[in-house]
Length: 249
View 1 (cartoon, one colour):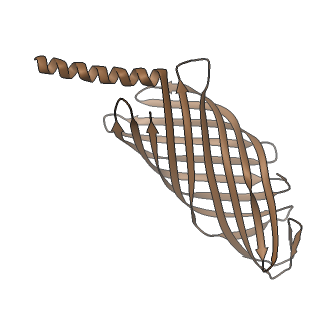
View 2 (view 1 turned 120 degrees about the vertical axis):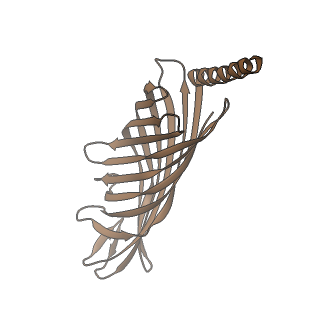
View 3 (view 1 turned 135 degrees about the vertical axis):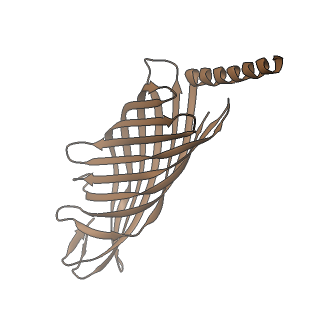
């Protein structure tokens, strides 16, 4: 009986310590790696030139800080690096970034973007069954789009800030360690839109007082629709299966 009481006390203490730690402060860090399929077109003005893009692996990282003060929002910073390469055969002259590429040319293209989101969010629900976050922030987009044909190159740089909405939800499958999750951010204004969404299944394989760890598997999709954003028009879709890991301290 004494051993049973001690075991129960230790279990209650461990659960209480974990709950208290989550209530006071929490740090989340994660990394996602995904194999993407891309399609799209771009130009400095209409009509846009379509390109055939090769499949490529991408990376994304995030860090979130949650606290116990109800009136203050939690903070999340997430970063994604996207790079795709494509090609096209012109059926007419194509002018891009100050260079004119003649009809029938074989073009190589590259799209290199680094996006960093600064998010302030609130936890509308946070219990063992359901978690729901909602927030706002800003997305910084940096990078460039380049077109090359033989010795001729045109490069269009990009560096812009866009307002952003953010939401994330997680539904636990009780007593299994599994949960279903979805999250997304939508950025843009009347002329340009950028959304980044993901959904999938996760498994919590480590749960201690000091550290929780989840493995995630799902589908991620990005859609970029730019209209005269730093003199760039673009309509690019990037999607694929991703795997990731999240640590909760």
